[in-house]
Image 1: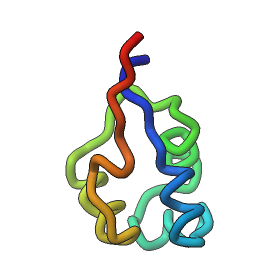
Image 2 (image 1 turned 135 degrees about the vertical axis):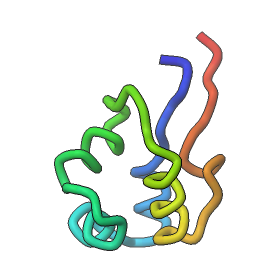
Image 3 (image 1 turned 45 degrees about the vertical axis):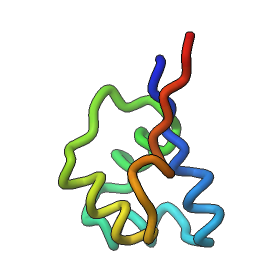
Image 4 (image 1 turned 120 degrees about the vertical axis):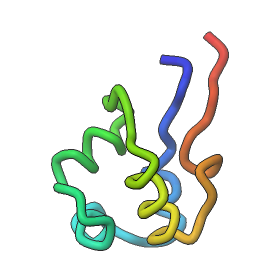
Length: 68
């Protein structure tokens, strides 16, 4: 997939676990895990916004375009 999700990297930098971030973002841990493990097909902008707020980062810190 040409879009890579680097959520795990940002979570490690911010020293926040999956359960805590899921609670802050108001998303199920299972859905956050799917996103974190680069298995998601889509993400809502509202979810991305909440993740960025919780991690104090930009969308480009989480999403990356990778040429195939």
